[in-house]
Amino acid sequence: MASQNTKGFERIYRATGYSLAGLKAAFTNEAAFRQELALVVILAPLGFWVGNSGVERALLIGSLLLVLIVEILNSAVEAAIDRFGEEQHFLSGRAKDLGSAAVMLSLLNVGLVWGLILFF
Image 1: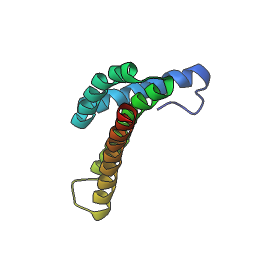
Image 2: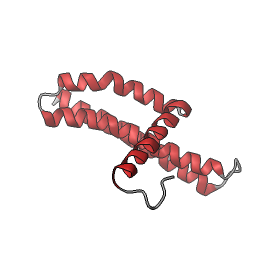
Image 3: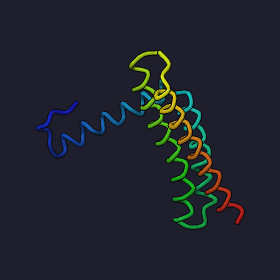
Image 4: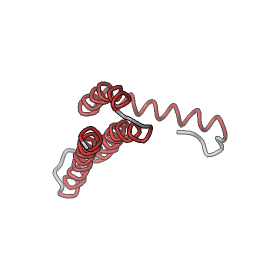
């Protein structure tokens, strides 16, 4: 962690390093993240091609990036819960289910955005 005295470019540099470490951890440890990243790699170029305006392109690609963001947050919740042990607790289960629901809604958002832009 960065010390409290870190300011300016040094703070930005360190924060970037932590962010890149998080992306590496997601890629290395989370199969769902890798699958969703593959979806982004395939669909993002298509989004640039089929979008008729900057707004459409932003919506198409932004909806894909949102899935990765939500998946990372879901993985963070799961990792924090798993840190405390493997025992079953209804609040732990609820937290994991809520994270999973958030990922599902972000994927539904992709379908909605892409469907509306491509077919209407």
